[in-house]
Image (spheres, helix red, strand yellow):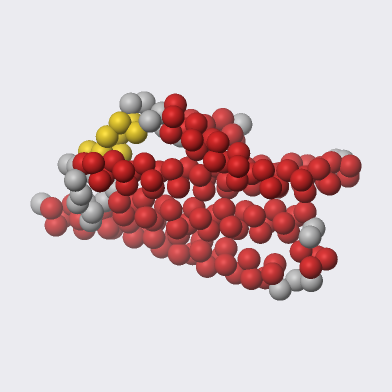
Length: 175
């Protein structure tokens, strides 16, 4: 039974997540390399800065997600205390990367909206706000972990257990 659970987890969870994450890593590294090869004057444009920032956030997400997926699979068998610590660390990393990615995507959308409506005076302000995405993502991640703390690690089901649903701050950020 354990062998079939491991195989099912590999087939339905771990391998698809790892495969998709590898594709994401390749595309993020390709984008980073292409932008880095441009002239410094061109690299300083807001859209390219946003794309570079988004690629870095998504690269972090592409590393965090397969690690979390493997941690929550039957491939890893750990003590409940170690499982809890692993869940806290990996979900925090995942939330941080996801918040940064969502905020970067929102930043791109705002920039495109400014260009669309010809609000050119806002574009220089966007340059200044880009550096605040990671600090805001850290605050949101800490808030997520404080408001909805991880209760335990279920050894039998290989799951991180929260008292209530989690991820609601991501929905709020998107809205």
